[in-house]
Image 1 (tube, rainbow, N blue to C red):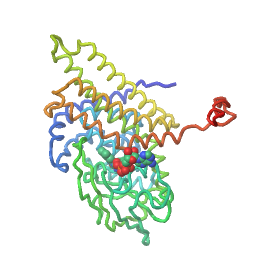
Image 2: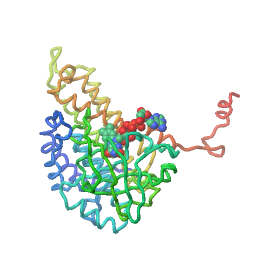
Image 3: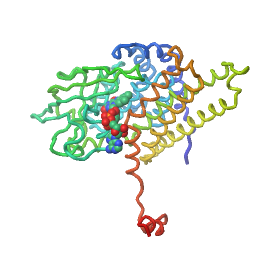
Image 4: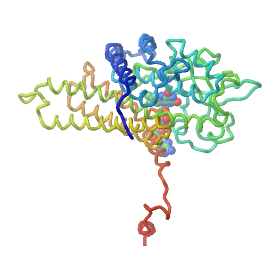
Length: 414
Ligand SMILES: Cc1cc2nc3c(=O)[nH]c(=O)nc-3n(C[C@H](O)[C@H](O)[C@H](O)COP(=O)(O)OP(=O)(O)OC[C@H]3O[C@@H](n4cnc5c(N)ncnc54)[C@H](O)[C@@H]3O)c2cc1C
């Protein structure tokens, strides 16, 4: 049975997150968006407060002091924080994902060493570093020849690995105190057979964030270039089996709904755009009446609501399948595409209704439109996620009741 009735705890967390979004995040969000230097906009007090409320460590299992929140709960809370500001929500969403990885891809010994570091420091954010100047989508839908994909190298020297290379566009880059990074153990083998995952702290010698990218939206959070120059990682900080990281991490991120969480955060932006547009439509008078009384604007608002509901239901369905231990992997990718495209459409419709006023920076709509654009590419481009989902399509043969001989003949031109 599919049941989206929220548990008491989920309702409580939603309330905590909404209060945090409206009263803590929102008051400074517009100003943070306008800070010209991209490395100056992040507000650590927001992280301290989220830690106090238990929001930062939501995905850490209860045995280690966290909330042990499932994907559905993380999605709901992520959407709610993004209602206040998308960049702030991304800072936590990335942190939750790596905490999930640290909780499920690690040995007990690694959990005992790493999770307390994350739990005990109320400003500990995390990052995942895969993308490189010459490798983006190649990691999401792997190009399986040795010359494609990640170029960062990990060379084994005794009981240590030495990492060299550059990562870019990394969310929480320059903010994260703990970083998960992927590197190739052997450039003569395809990435599927030669990637390893490593965990390190930001004070490890040879590691540095050398650039914080100036970007269109999500301006409250940082995206960094990370340089690794002879960074030494001890054997005990290799995550999983060296060579198999792409399969292990890809499987984990699918199982624990990375794309579902991403789609949920951008939906928070669209919900905010809808809500303030509804208010504006009730107050703005043109043609002798509030513009909400013009039928065409009523239709616009109804369609915005429809997209929000449909996207949320899709995300929650995909999230729900993860809680059943049998994820619908295709839906898990496709729902992020639908949510991010719907979010963009909703904010664009809002922009139309606000007209000239929406174009002005003094008003909130143009920021929401810039924010909504980010998830068309982030967490995998929508094209590439569609490609990934298409590869999961069932192939049916002649014994399947859906199979039609006539279709086969038509395809052969008979
Ligand atoms: C806001 C933001 C936050 C991010 N955060 C992180 C992060 O925390 N960690 C991280 O590792 N990365 C992060 N990224 C990087 C992001 O994952 C990449 O931008 C994304 O995977 C695409 O890579 P690319 O930009 O190099 O584009 P490319 O891979 O160069 O793609 C260019 C175009 O080609 C298309 N394309 C690529 N391959 C194929 C194919 N096989 N078939 C058909 N079309 C194809 C793409 O869809 C796209 O339209 C972030 C990006 C953004 C914008």
